[in-house]
Length: 303
Image 1: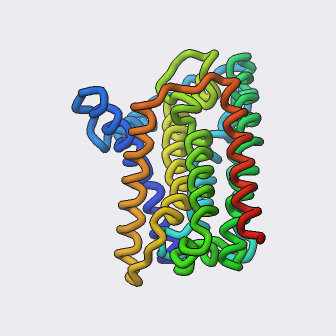
Image 2: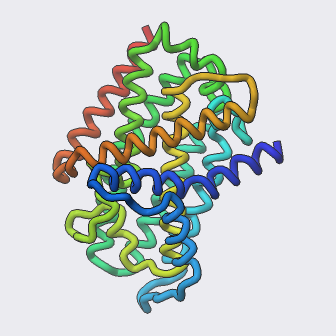
Image 3: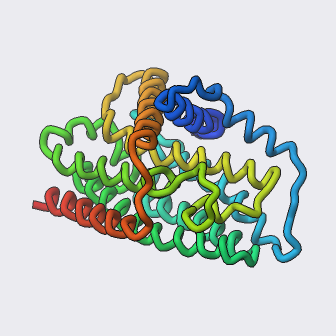
């Protein structure tokens, strides 16, 4: 178990920034540019970690908790997630509920750090973040209930184990709805187009980025690192649903998982290249639709 936990930790810490690099490279290709190296996100994080801090006098210790938990929570959450067919490092009945609440804790800490600055803009971003999260969490919960119903297990290892490939012939429609809904949640939770634009600097249109306007130096580096890890954790379950294959060899299973994450990052880059950002009033409407799709997928597996 110790070796398993070490593998999970190293994968999420070291490889997650590469996903951001792949997304940037794909978007650059669509724009007709060569693009930055794939390791550029790592260079940016390392550069920020070596800088000095600029801290507002209105902030308290709460301001530091958000970025720190933003890094710790994805690492802990990743220990519960299988790397494809490679089992999770920590597993017990009902662990998916703790997994959901871990991200709720990180979201609360980030929103509290934004409010701690006393900035009206960051408070606006925090309000948007928790509002959209309240719409994303039911989607995740219903989708996990679908997988739990099909697998007969309440742990990630059982839900996303070797039997998931056998679910597609009998419950393919439900799994397609789950994959679609999880893709929407992934884009929303990770502040990607068409729900948010991670590269914009217009405070009135930002959701996630506006909450970290006052972060600088190492704290901003932790924010970017935590965001990359959150993307990997969010995409791990989606990749397992879409690529439910098992080779029976741990090394090959991890390689298949890595391939799935690379393809997912490329898909996100394509989506961000061909779509425009939604208007803010449209986002709740789309997420309510996702809730209905996820609920319908759950109803299908109950019959």
